[in-house]
Image 1 (tube, rainbow, N blue to C red):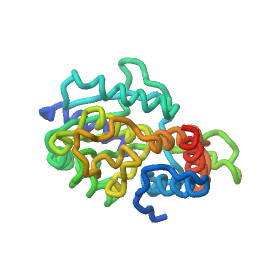
Image 2: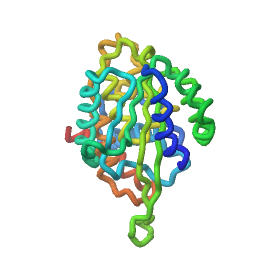
Image 3: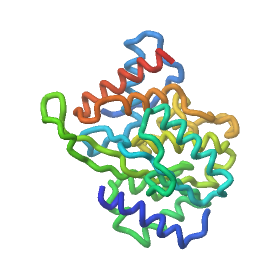
Image 4: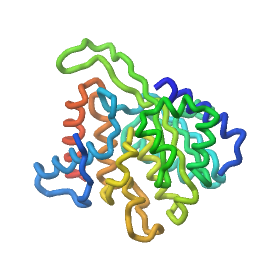
Length: 273
């Protein structure tokens, strides 16, 4: 965790000298089931597939106001990305945006060659990358997808008395670094890529299961066989339900309770929207 957070700052120091540039199963359903019991099974499968909770005792989420930094793409396109991130924060009921001059905690990096960028970064700061889990290192260094990312989290005491209900502990999502490979994402609308970025920015999404994501989520955008220009432009109801449920459930519960609450709240949101 320590190296992940430190790596965020070092990455942008490095970029300053570089030219811009349960075992889950596949999500196969795109329409929610009408029967509440079946819908809850679908939402539980969604939660298990997209969530990255490896080596964690809880789900993480942002506790502090978000602050976005974008590099590697013309400033004329920044507003599209920032708008999508703001819209997603509103849907999730996440903390609001920090004022101008804030310290960035959502870093979006566009590069002509994501693998080359990560290789150069690893050569310069090997300890930062090597501190990641082995599976995450492979995912970061040799990604076959247009977008890759990593997170920094921080555990803290809540001040509540530990009990069967509360762990007196929660995990804050303190920083997200998102790398977009421009060549691999060529042909996708910027709105679509921005929506994808916004989903990854506010929740710990499991990049290792990207091939399992379907069109029920913006996360399945890169797996779709339809023309790239026809990609989803916005979060799906599943995505909105996931983020809304994540930010409205108690943060200090054991992970098994959170997973159950998350899938249940998702089902309710989908039924009502």
